[in-house]
Length: 317
Ligand SMILES: Nc1nc2c(ncn2[C@@H]2O[C@H](COP(=O)(O)OP(=O)(O)OP(=O)(O)O)[C@@H](O)[C@H]2O)c(=O)[nH]1
Ligand SMILES: [Mg+2]
Image (cartoon, rainbow, N blue to C red; front, top):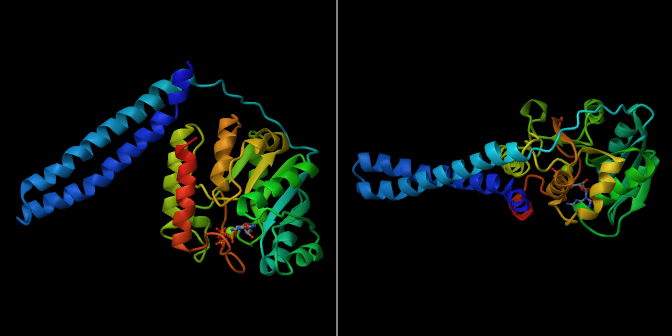
C-alpha cells in the first residue's frame, strides 16, 4: 500500500509531462510532414519525429490514466462534507509590503473597510521608504519581518493574522487585489479549510494587469501539473497570493514549508495538499499593481526563474 501511495499522483504528473512532451514533438513532426509534401525534406525526417511523439503520448496517457482512473479511485480518502459556519469568527488580514508606500495606504483602507475584517496587519519586509508610516496612518498594525523575501513576508503575514483571528487572510499590499472578493471567499470557506484565489479569469482581469498573454496561460499550465499531482481540486493559477486559511489549517502546515522566496505560493499549496486540507480555488479580480514591482511583474526573465523554482517544487514533492 505504501508503494502505491508513493506512485499515486507522481505517475499522473510524470505521465502528463511525457504526454505534453509528445504533443510538443508533434509540432516538428507535422512541420516535417508539410515540408516533405513540398519535397523540401526526405520522408524519413518526418517519421523520426512522429515515432517518439506517438510513443511519448501513448506512454504518458496510459501512465497518467492508470494513476487517475485506477489508483486514485482505489485509494480515495473518505470525503468530509460538513459545513462549518463562520458566525462569530474573527477575520484578520495579513498584508505583505516591500517598499510599497505608493499602494499600502489604499490597500489597508480597502481591506479595513470590509465589514467582515476585524483588523489588518502589514508585514514590513525591510522597507526603505515610508511604507510603515503610511500603513499605520491608514489604520493597520505594522510588524517588521527581517528575513528578506516574498515567502518570508507571506509566512509572517499568515502567522500574525492567525495569532489575532480565527480566519487568516493573506494578500499583497500592492493594490492588485480587491477586498470585495472576500465576500465569495468567505462564503466558500464554510465548506473548506482553505480558499485560494485565481488570477487567470480574463473577464476579471484589468487590461493592464500582470496576467498577460504569457503569464496567464503559463500559470494555467503549471497549475494543471500541480492538479495532476494532487488530483481533486481544480486549479488554474499557481501565483495568486490572495488566500484565506482557517487558523487551524495554517497551523497544520506552517512548519512544513520549505521556501522563503518567490516560489512560496506553490510551496504553500503543496504542503496544504499534503496535509489533506480541503481546498478550493475561486476566480478573483486582478488589477495592475500600484508602484514599482519587486517580484515578477511583467519581467519575463524573472518569471522564468520563478517558474523553474515552482516546477522544481512540484516535481520533487
Ligand atoms: N518580490 C518580493 N516581494 C516582497 C518581498 N518582501 C515583501 N514583498 C511583497 O510581496 C508582494 C509581491 O511582490 P510584487 O512586487 O507585487 O510582485 P508580483 O506580485 O510578482 O508582481 P506585480 O504585482 O505585478 O508587481 C508585494 O506586496 C511586495 O511588496 C521581497 O523580498 N521580494
Ligand atoms: Mg503583486
